[in-house]
Length: 351
Image 1 (cartoon, rainbow, N blue to C red):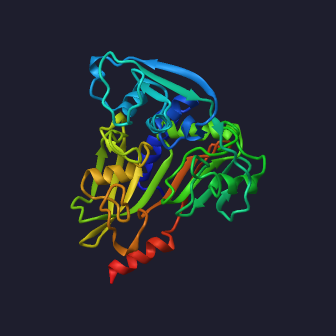
Image 2 (tube, rainbow, N blue to C red):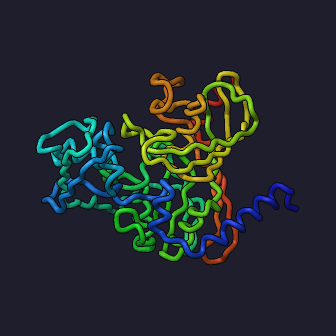
Image 3 (cartoon, rainbow, N blue to C red):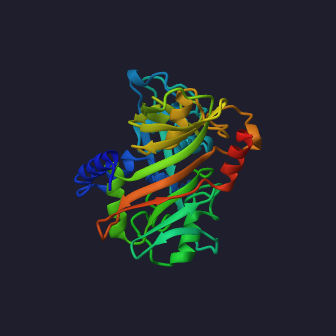
């Protein structure tokens, strides 16, 4: 028999699913950073394909050049930084650094080279398949594996492994470089991911992500003692103005971000939490926990540079994943145990 809380959660999920029927996939990708973005796939370097000219207004004066380009065009800030470093951006005819502060009325010229696609090829890499049928695959991604090929990570990714396992039986909506990939988790985050084996399944899963009906819960170890048993962090996340690898609360181009936190166990210097995503921004849990002074243990990007236990990545594991099956319409939920690397740290602090 369902408990009252489960009945309420099921009713709320059903209500959200009613809005998932007519979802624009491009719009969905813009709303959820865990969905993949177009310039994740590109490397600059070909002939010039397009020239953009921008003129900052008074409201733009003082913004960093890379941030301004990211806001004023459809280019990401990281791609803008690459163009600046490659000498493809000039301000009033001269080369400047990416941190240059723009002035109102000056002319900014951006040469956009033809994009060179990164080729993805099947690779015989072992993967942990939790569930598979004709429509979906649920896999457990190990820590240290990148989800899809990109500049700097052309192979050895989950996509390469899935292509070997499935052959042509993957959705094509996200193109040849990321077949089947509906959402992603960070390289150093382990845990459950869903993959679409056909376009119909891809559309259904993407629509569910947009209306926040997919259950995504993570387990994490954070610094210090969290006093409240439960809390919700509702703080928009955007790009960091200084470090292109980071995201920040109220950063450039911020979007709504909501994370629900539940304390599982307190260890004095550390707290074990369950974090349930309502939205899916890049680094969302890591940014939100750092914003309340409880960064994830092992996360040198948002926490202390020197980490305990010799860790080189955050202790974050996607332990629960639930969605409505694209064909049957039934709700499916999968769980994953804390992996060995995470368990070993917990064993040490429990001594």
